[in-house]
Image 1 (tube, rainbow, N blue to C red):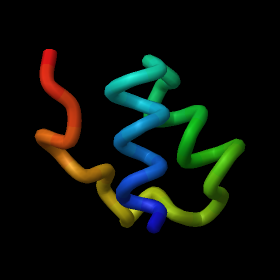
Image 2 (cartoon, rainbow, N blue to C red):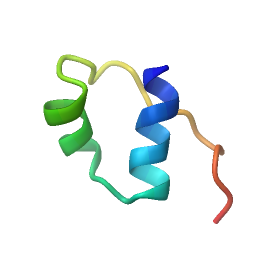
Image 3 (tube, helix red, strand yellow):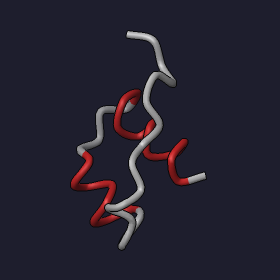
Image 4 (cartoon, rainbow, N blue to C red):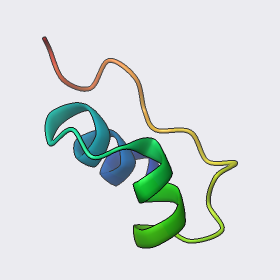
Length: 40
């Protein structure tokens, strides 16, 4: 589930990866967001 939420927060809502990894999903830096989920 984290891969989906990380993609939504980063790609769609433009929240920085650092903020997602450090604030929202602590200790999850090794989990990469899903790519290609949203079209540009």
